[in-house]
Length: 72
Image (cartoon, rainbow, N blue to C red; front, side, top):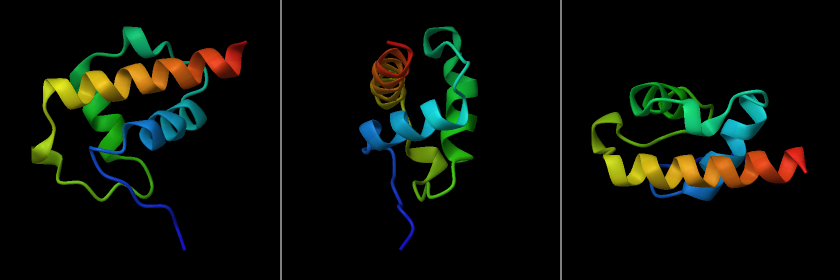
């Protein structure tokens, strides 16, 4: 079964973003672009209208953590 996730699954989204965008600097991605990246991930089932700045910030930090672990 394919992995599915929504806005509250920041850790999984961070992993997915690090895999899909390995060369991106998570801190340089604008929230509008981050929203597009997240909603475009395979397995994302969340309502695009249910995001907010707090959720995007949490996702960005999870992505940054995963990004830094992969670069270490």
